[in-house]
Length: 252
Image (cartoon, rainbow, N blue to C red; front, side, top):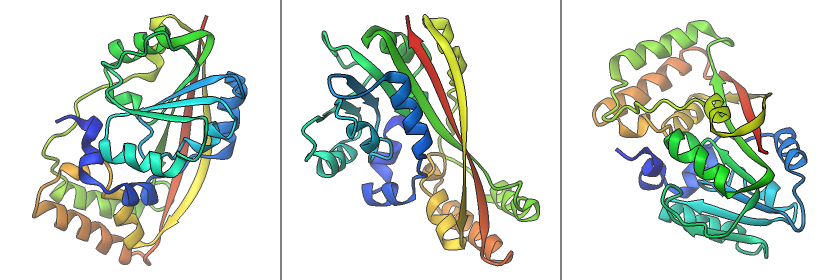
């Protein structure tokens, strides 16, 4: 299964946009400062989805290009950001797309580049970056164990019974391996957020995760209902602790 299109093919852009976790202003400020982004600079976003990480970059006035594999998400991006004069998007596969002579001051990925084999992703990014350009990669790791371990254990019982993805992802992607491909000045930064969900909200959030989208019936319904019942039994509230991780490197 091609996990790169699993969201586009199984989730509406509206649902994906509503329940996809958001990044923080501090992260975008750090990316913009690191890349010295602004008018006259160029940025490429790999796999923007529905644009959770797009507008702060567009607002710098840079020349922005996105490459998005999903047809539905591409159209959603056009509808959202087409009014920006500095916005462009192509519906294409980053792995095979020919960027020609285009070079970028910033290439970035919000929880997307990990679906591409590193031996393809990192050399290609290196080739299309300008000298001293920035590669920024970020994603969110969510912990709902620390805030309520008893509820977490109850949810794990549901996972044990019904979490049976049809096509589990076996790809291993190590962000730190980027330094093996000519990049320098490796940095890792962390940002933290807290979310509070009720049972229905948590189910709507978790059901758009890539592995969950491959669970077949009747396991899918039993899985989601089991999680909902577990949260209801603990007061209909669950706390999510988000660790947003940003990796930064340069091309020298």
